[in-house]
Structure formats: structure tokens, C-alpha cells
Length: 451
Ligand code: AMP
Ligand code: ZN
Image (cartoon, rainbow, N blue to C red; front, side, top):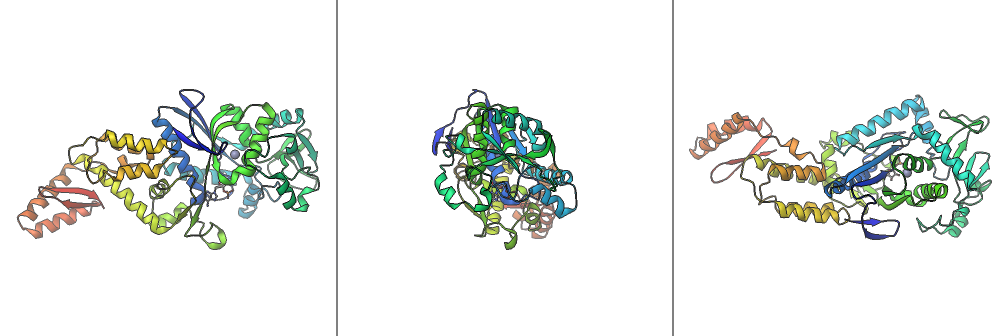
């Protein structure tokens, strides 16, 4: 299987360390507000990754984290804590806010029919372990103390700039003066934040005799170390994470324990909506509820995502979503043929589709292979199951066989039409379409389809 690896900036042959088990970590959501459809694109791509690995026969050990502490509104370790901001906005405790948005996230994650991760880890459940990592970094001399936190001296990690190809000199020249009071280097970041006198922070833990909370970038390093063990095989996240979040994850974990963090890094690109950046001021922060109001399901959206590639910047439009909805309906009607006609041989199609997916998760290519045959072939149950295994579009379940009674009605209607008894034919067709089914007449009978 070939994957584009951000670490080497190349498409490489993927082999896990263990011949049977693949260790995958995907950076998860910060649960301070509702996730919009842009936030969910990456999880569809990573679900495709998991499913493609499973097709290769691997057991996928996938960990997803939930950021419920420490993520500040600015990546530069200033600004407000996103969780505290959410709590103030809603007049609730941070814990309630985290619970509510985490549940909402998971509800949508499951409605998208994603393979359940082997573990979902909340950052707040790993704070003791964060402290252990901070201690290990301190022992190795990476940290220095400031009034607002323990900072990582990035000049002590010689390969700091490598992952993101950072130009540190250039960064320094562009830095805003106000951050740099106590920071030694512009790229230094807080591994642990102190709560200063007069400052309040709802989530806090005692460490070294003072109250504080973990920096954002430490949770992923800690969870990977504790739950999967480095090196992992594949680490996934958004492209926005490359220069700071992932660079800092690597500096912490590799700095503390000297082992490579991950062999492969996959990064998804962003989507725009109707040609615009997703933003509140443009009123285009669409959630799944907004799609539902316009008649689109989670599966329609998933279909839209699967038509593109994780590395491409993509534009979402409702016209394209409508086209994706129709395409999914075509696949459902193709799958429904398995109850009506003799199955044809589909092994070549399956191999051609898998070949596309093995080529850096080219789902668009795999779908194009499928499109070549849907008007010619009739799938059997195993092929429909294969489609669901690779795409998770819930096709099999949504195309149940119809009742004998309905089948009889379809046959009767066809006979009535042939005998030019149009009154009977029309009335039967009305009864049939009330069940959400349309008919496609052939020479010797009708095929039923989902409307
Ligand atoms: P946020 O909650 O705004 O920090 O977003 C969480 C993550 O969602 C970001 O780090 C991105 O990787 C991802 N994300 C945000 N906006 C988009 C978008 N328009 N398209 C794809 N991914 C996005
Ligand atoms: Zn992360």
C-alpha cells in the first residue's frame, strides 16, 4: 500500500512494524463548540484509511483523543483557553461543556458510520501522565520556567525545524514583540501552564506545589506513549497541525524518550464552502443539522467527501452535495438489483477498486471503477458487503429485499400495463410508490428502485 508521508514529503510503500497490527493515532476535536462539516472531513478520510488497512488484512489499533483541556485560542500559548471560553459563553461549567460537545461529536461520528476507534482518550484523563512526560523533559534539560508556564526550549532539540521545514530565522524576524518577554526562542511553547495570582482557571491540577494545567501539544505525545507506545505506524491530522502542534508533539516525545514518534504522517487539506473560508462572519459554518434541514443525510455528506482526496483542497457546494446524494442513490439501486436478478462476476471490479485505494487512498478512483459497471453488472451480497466494508456508506442495510406482497403487486402492475389496463396499472403504481419505490420497466418485467 502506498501513502504520502509528510515526514519524507514522498509517496512511500507502507509497511507496519508488526505484520498484523497497525498502530494509528488521529488528533481529535477540541470540544468547546459544535464541530462543523469542515471539521468532519478528516475523520471520513481517516475512516477510509482504517477500512483500507482492514482490507489488507491488518488489525487496526486506532486511538482518537478528545481535547477537553489546555487548547488556547492562539497556537502561540497566549489567548484564552477554548474550554473556558465555551463555558463562559454558555454559563455552564467547563466539564459540562466538554461533556456536551464530546457527546455531540461522537453522535455525528457514529452517524457517519465510522469504524469505532479501539480507544477514545480524553486529555483530562491523562494529566498525571502528562506530568511524567514534563518531568522527563525537565530531567533532560529541555525546559525553563516562566511566570506563565514551563516552556520547551526548542533550540535544544536540533531537529526541531525539520518536520515542517521551518525557517526559524524568518519566524524570529516576523514574531510579535509581546510574546517574547520571557520566551527564549520564538518557537518555544508551554508544556505546562501555571495559574497566576489573580487568574482563574476552572480546570486545574496541583503540580510542583502550584496549580496549573497541561499545554495543548502534550496530550497527544502522552497518549501515544501511554496507550500505543512509540513509534506508532501512522499519525494523522490537519495540515494546519504541521508547523506547530505536530512539530511540538515530536519535540516532546522524541526529546523525552529518544524514540521516533511515528513512521508515517498523513495530513488532510481544508475545504472551503461555496468558494469561501468557513467562518462565522460569512454564515457558512454548516453543521449536520443544517444539511438535514435541506434534505441531506450524513451518508450523502460522506459520499461527497469520498469523491475527493485527503490531500486536495476542496470546495463544498450544495450542488455538489446534491450530485453526491444522487450518486449514492445510484449505488443503492445497483445494490438492490441483488434481490431481483442473477449476480454477475465482480472479482475483477473488487481488485481494481482495491488497487485504487492502495494507491494513497484514491477513493475517487475506486468509485470511478465502480461507476464503470453499475449499469452492466448485478452484485451479489458479498460484493455489496465489500462496498460497505471499504466505504462505510451503509448500502446493504438501506437496500433490504421487499416483501412478497410488494413483488406480487409489481408483477401485477406489469401485466396490467401490458394488457393496456392503465387504470389498474396506475393505481398499483401509486400503491408501490407510497412505499418509496419507483419502477423501471424492461421487456419482460419491472425492476424496482429506491426513489
Ligand atoms: P478548530 O476546532 O477550529 O481548531 O478545528 C479543529 C480542526 O479541524 C483543525 O485543526 C483542522 O485540522 C480541522 N478543520 C478546521 N476547519 C477545517 C476545514 N475548513 N476543512 C478541513 N478541516 C478543517
Ligand atoms: Zn495532536
